[in-house]
Length: 195
Length: 195
DNA sequence: AGGTTATATGAACATGTGTTCAGAAAAAAG
DNA sequence: CTTTTTTCTGAACACATGTTCATATAACCT
Image 1 (spheres, each protein chain N blue to C red):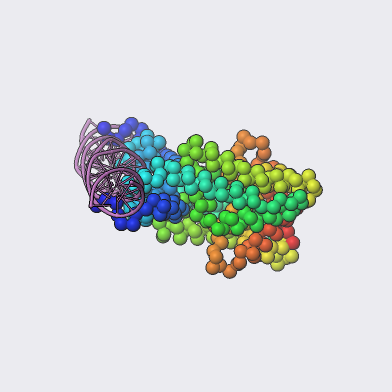
Image 2 (image 1 turned 135 degrees about the vertical axis):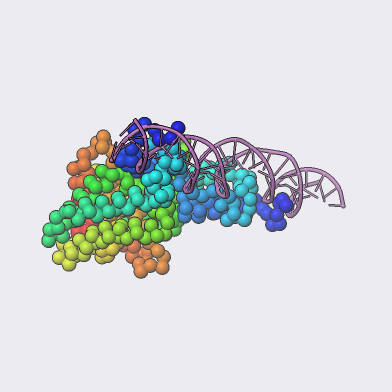
């Protein structure tokens, strides 16, 4: 046997991507083999190499596009003058964007150490760019006198760490709605950085 | 060749533990082989099995003892009546305990998915027990009227996520002392849960 | 000193790894 | 229908995996 019925590039490509995403998120990059991914797609391992140069590129591709989508989505947001308003928007945006993509998010910070040095540097730069947006909000707020944090860099990391935590426990069928989660976290963030 | 000069159980045992700790933390459980661990210890792979039944047990052993040390250290703390005092102590304790053991901490939450179901359940129970201690503080504080969080369970997870974040950036040779870090985080936590 | 035990070696086992590639067959083009 | 191109198979490569075990030797005991 060789080429099977109904085989098509436009279909197999995305399917490989989705299978890798799911399996990396569930078992971890190092624990997943190319043969497992191929099996999930319904294809032999060799066929994967028509779409991806190697395993490392699959991981990097997933992480890079995730970070770029994050930055692109963020860039489309309004940017009010008021720092308090900008922070509120950031909190809501962050929570919703991340809860919509639990697998990408999980991979993006669990598999950093499995990137080659070169790839790591690139992903890290994107992550830094995102964090800097929050830090700028905090700096503006401190300058405006509405926030009172002694160190904006640390406050940035603290807020992001807190918000990222949502992904570890939130379930759509749980007792809290997305709006409620957003309200609760916004309340805590607002108070934490208050002047 | 067989038994080498200077070989001794009291030495090799802990050395295996330390090597596994370091390698698992650096490369991840799935990416580290028994032969790598053995090489770090200066021994052949087969010798590891005089000390550990299998690879899974090494991971579980590291995580279990870490969590038990955490609970034991926490249990030795004073428990003032005042919820605000207890929370302050919790924050300081958590930050210091975790910064003293970055590798154990990293493994304890990065490698949960590599535990067998049975082992995962046990580790999870220990983690829950620790989290419950914080939640009890928050509940008391709410009852006393000094804290104002709408949901103590979520506030617990949010605070712990925020505190855990310290481990991702803190360096001993960095610009901030441990005391300064503790002060900054205590400030944010105090305000975040304030009434 | 000699005998026993603890602790290691190193080869072996069966299986899995990422990746390559010649060839086959389906789809698209003529 | 015939030719070309796209897409996949299946075998192969060289090496790595966790684990077991007969065997050898250093350390300890009497």
